[in-house]
Every structure is written in structure tokens, then in C-alpha cells.
Image 1 (tube, rainbow, N blue to C red):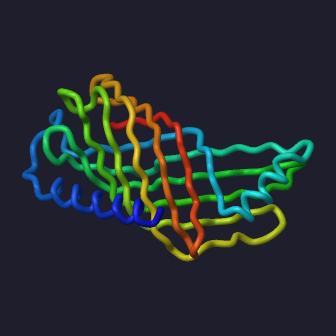
Image 2 (image 1 turned 45 degrees about the horizontal axis):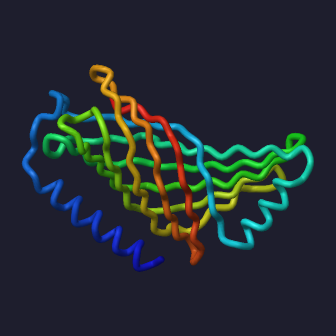
Length: 196
């Protein structure tokens, strides 16, 4: 697993270097882009935490909501069909009963690249790859927040993009890995995003 993650990170760094070394070209006559996304996430935790959350989820009256967010994505064009920039990918997993709750938040502060595979930018299939710093935050109604040290994370995925004339609607399937304090957290996310 670690070899796969390190290989992915090296590939992303190599691709990022080649993307950023290309000369700037006009992409749809826009000089920069903003990206936001929202969707559902399926999360895999370290075994002890996963067992505890599974037990909590089976109790009567417990509700669970797992969301994935892409926040503050700022991208610049590199080439005719590629953009690169920075983004925050966040995952929130909340368990609640009668006003009491436990929430586990995962963050990935990363460099990001998106590349369109079709004939033009903004329409058709695309790929996405992020690499950066991972953090965890545990919140509960009973006590203070508990944060982690910084770790390493990657996100890879893709989907289909619809060009609505200056605004693009992106349907995404993403896999993310976060390695924090010698534990691993894996997420598969389905989301809808807007690239403006």
C-alpha cells in the first residue's frame, strides 16, 4: 500500500512539474478558475476506530451523515486542457443522537491538477490528482476538539464535465488516502462541483 501511495505521489509530482513547466496558453479566454464541490463519502477508518463507529451506528436513534467538500479551489491554466492550483478537500463524518454528537473531520491541503481528455477544455471526461498535507479533527458535544499532527495525503479521481457556457458542472468519483500519526484513512467520494 505504501509503495502505491509513494508511486502515486512521485507520478503526481512529475506530472505537476511537467505541467508547470509548459508555457502559458489561453484556456477558454480565462486567466484563472475557482472550484467548489459537495457530495457523499464512504470512509474507511483504522480498525479500532471503525469497530467503535460501527457499534455506535447500530444503536437505536443514531443518525450518521458523511459529506465530502472541495473548498477554495484556485486554478490557473497550463496548456490547452489542463489546470493546476491549490484546493482543500474536506470530509466530515457525524454521528448524532438526541443532540449529542461525535464528528470526525479529515482535511487535505493540496496542490491539485485537472486534465480534460476530450477535444476541448471544460467538456467531457477529466482526471484529477491532488497531493498535500493531511489533518484530522475530532469534535464531540462532550468535550474540546482534538486535532492531529500533519500527515501526508493524496486524492485521485475523475469524472465527466458539462460546459454550461463559462460555468462547468463536474460529476466526480474520487479516492483519497490520508496517512496521519501512523494511521490510514481511506475515502471514496461521489460529488458534484462547479468550476467557474
